[in-house]
Amino acid sequence: MNWNDVLKYAKNNPAPDRRVERSDEEWKKLLTPEEFHITRKKGTERPFTGEYCEAHEPGLYACRCCGTPLFDSGQKFESGTGWPSFTESVKDNVIKYEKDTSFGMTRVEVMCNVCDCHLGHVFPDGPPPSGLRFCINSASIKLIG
Image (cartoon, rainbow, N blue to C red):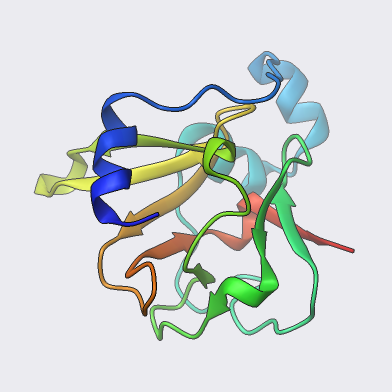
């Protein structure tokens, strides 16, 4: 996976293995107000405040909303940005990519492809071999075994 793949997927995302769909009211019952704001309303936590910003425990990071495994801790790296950063996802079809032109810039938003949970953004300035930096809100993920 590289930046060209990201741009390709932003135009035509791979199909997920399954779908989870709930109403806002159903999500509000499952999430804290901050988690709901970030995951369902595309919010962003303040840099260097997230639970997983400095975490180094082994395991998988799953979607906070639906539990789908998204990132392996072995692909996590210190980006210095204030958000957990990963070089790749555990599987190509677990991430949904969408062009984001908010705030006067062009970025690529990343979401859980199973439930559309807002995760963060991906940038082409990560370390080798992918060159990618998935910049993820801690409130959008949870560390599982």
